[in-house]
Length: 90
Image 1 (cartoon, rainbow, N blue to C red):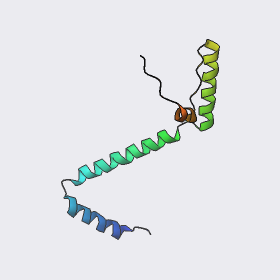
Image 2: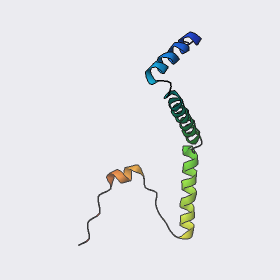
Image 3: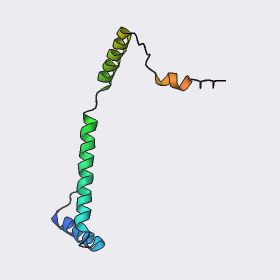
Image 4: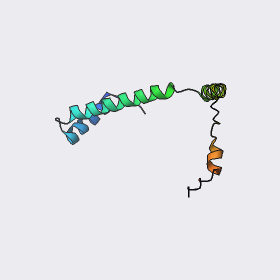
């Protein structure tokens, strides 16, 4: 379903009648900023690291912590679900 020039013109006239001529620039500005934020979010999402890169980075951090003597085991989601709350100090 393609929108041609007559359909777009009818839609613009209806929008103009609903919102009024004074509010149209603000409405267009808001829509433009929303599109800009959406594209910015898409670009940030696309630049995220792949799971393989994240795993390699975690492995490198683990090796570095072993070399410096500060051994910390990564927490797996299953470990968190099975974990029991710590006893309060008496």
